[in-house]
Length: 264
Image (cartoon, rainbow, N blue to C red; front, side):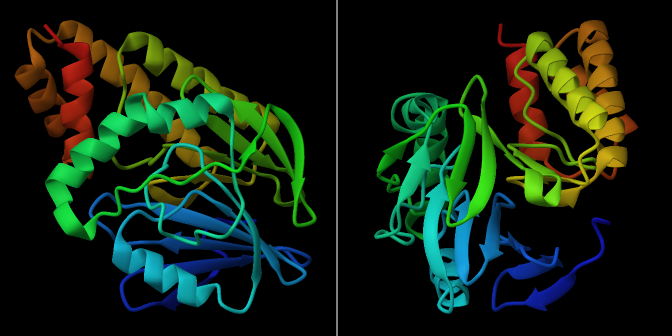
């Protein structure tokens, strides 16, 4: 499936890109919120499984209305645990480490920070996890999935459409990179995606991407490590990154990356 082979529907705030695989459809919801969230809906035989949740109240309402004609069998809550008022009666699935990440770890810190920044527009309530899951095969609503645990939460393989969901990629935007070891782990993960030959890579903050995008991101991460090693401080690092990637979005993510590499 080509990442551009989709039907686009403009909604009041966000937009939906729909990929038709025959027996199953992928609805990629671009929220157009302040942090460029994406939510993915797998639809099969009138039933739906969602990967992640929106976290702004207006997006919650918009996506709830969009889903009114399908039966939501469950939400996989990995890296984005906020937005707890969205589909409160639908089953919520997460691994134990993802639950901990949202309720006590780095995810909670992000939710608290976003709540302070965005105020009442941001739904800081946390999804209540009904079903704890582990790595390996999982079937929800007749859709086969494979759960892969990560340091913070979990990724999701979707064999029926030869796709994988992970937190961040973004071939032309900055990403949060928590130091050299994290960069190396991201590079290894992307190389694994290339080796497996996925048709689509789904991420929480970007429209669906492909393996060419993964190659671009690997080169970016390798260069980021070199520039960080050669920079005297966070400001000189950010300046050089902005010079070499002038069109990249995600300045806030670059700021966070600089904080990780130059935390002293």
